Length: 189
Image 1 (cartoon, helix red, strand yellow):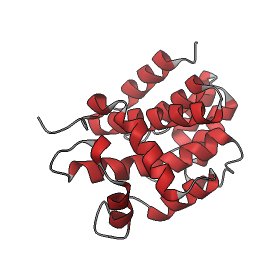
Image 2 (image 1 turned 90 degrees about the vertical axis):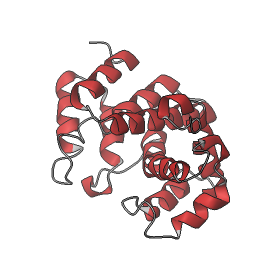
Image 3 (image 1 turned 30 degrees about the vertical axis):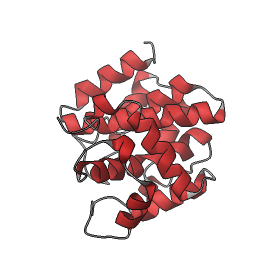
Image 4 (image 1 turned 45 degrees about the vertical axis):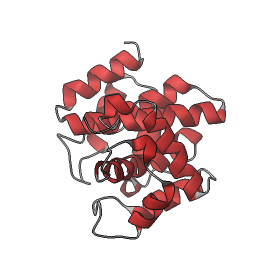
């Protein structure tokens, strides 16, 4: 079985029917590809890991099952172990250390992409490219806004990859803006 983007997309679609979860996967993929370019490493590998990191979430939405079920499937299908470990590490509750750039970047972008999506959707223009970093930082202090997003994970993620928080927000925002049409964040119709 080839472990390429087409296989990753097929796996995601087989397990995930929710359009918003698919968009989240695409956002994480874009951010992971951008980080791979920044690091001068394998863009396809980083992107594929971003695309499938939550493929099992719709069927396994609890801490007792999410990531564990997906990791079993990936291992059973023979996906690269370093990719599976990076996916396991994106959830703190697994206890899997993030000891590769891939794992650290996945953790750093996962919650942030969701928060940036929420910050975009409350803007009148609904255009991610226009979301000011300062606005995102301010909204992070508002616990009622996008309450399911773990702000501490966003902060720690930036630290783990050695980026200033504001710079990381801008970096991920710009990566998502590069596929804004696919994400539904290119502006109000």
